[in-house]
Image (cartoon, rainbow, N blue to C red; front, side, top):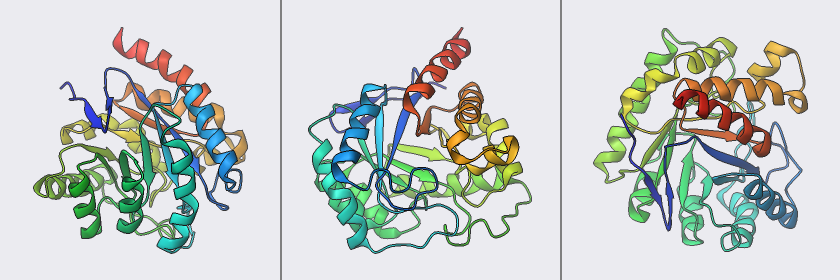
Length: 276
């Protein structure tokens, strides 16, 4: 089934090729790049570099959602992300996404010109549904078992793919009933899943196509890669490239990555093979 393009303000996401979403964490404690881009100028500069390296979307996050992390207030999150958005919105000509599950944060960022909401709780808050519907923007609905503080304590499933699909199907249906039509689904690699679960998601990714939505995956630098190859987070590029290449071959439409330049090159090859 050919996916329809998704409008992001004046931009359009076309799924004839895999879309690269560049990660911009403006947090002091993210698992991979915490503290590197808390300075506004550095964050803006990094986003521009990702744009130059071939990113199709920049995803800005102001709260770490690594395992066992604590939530922060809406005010603190907005204090981190607003100046970065203001510094970028007229500087790069690709969509900007806000990675948040807080309705007030999403609302304020959308008013500043953000084009897309990336919600790790999969629209678990009724107010977030209202915000996304009101602004008529696309949304990423992600699956997570629990919350970052407790999601990795002992995640268990009878059938991980079936249970994730059921969750995503329910949430996408609720979103559509609320008038939200542009939906991207994310099975949530690393969010309430162990290594085996994450590998099953990548292996069986094409089963999510039944949902009729573009599929986003975000394996970049995550712990399941480290568990397999025994390397620290700063040494997981090759593992990330393997994971996203498999994801593309198995149906991913968007890959969320830290290393844009390298991942862009790998995705171009995977796309060429997939479409040959």
